[in-house]
Amino acid sequence: MEIQRVYRTDAAQARGIVLVIDVFRAFSVAAYAFAGGVQQLWLVRAVEDALALREREPKARLAGEVGGRLIPGFDFNNSPARMAAADVQGRLLIQCTGAGTQGAVGAVNASHLLLCSLVNARATAAYARELAATTDGLITLMPTEPIGATGITTTEDDICADYLEALLTERADAEQARDNGIAWLRTSGRLAIFEQGIPDFPFEDIAAALAVDRFHFAMVGTREHWNQIAYIRCNAEIYLKH
Image (cartoon, rainbow, N blue to C red; front, side, top):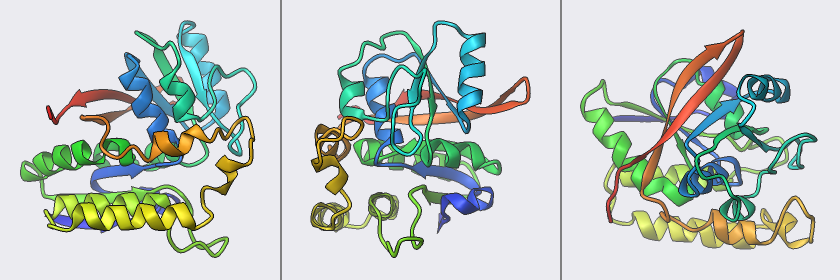
């Protein structure tokens, strides 16, 4: 098994089994949506693509954000806590965000595509290990939260990527290293926006996104095209029973 890491800005360099990571908040939202009974999830890069696909599928619901805020005309914002309380049973959900869905759609050279956050990390790692055993063994971890531009050198997506790598390589200290990363995150100031009472950033999102390994499914994506729109069709596949 070979493990490499690329970031969203270099998404086209991601090859092999690509684990696209967005902890705060796109793929935490996706996981809660699947747990709530969403039948299928489609990921797009642009708001206009989401709206066009809903024209095609009028019963679909739209979820996402621009600048962290609810998009006019969308049904849900990018909040995992609110998605956990939403009635989405049997629905098609179309998601558009500024980081996670961009990375997923941009990973054009992936042979397999998995969506991941802390809430389904262990199941995703287990699924990826099984895929690696039947392929060339290349796994790419793709944190989608940008680093460097504002002086940030570590993000929640890096912490999740570190945890995934530790699980993939079966390190004995995987959980301790993960917990140390989360402890740092809680004191780093990265979560301050959720403590300011801003409607689109509810405080409850912290606990929802940091509920490590809450879900026992991998979120598996396949690339699709319709009317010049590239999108990712995702399903949840139960992997860990316990």
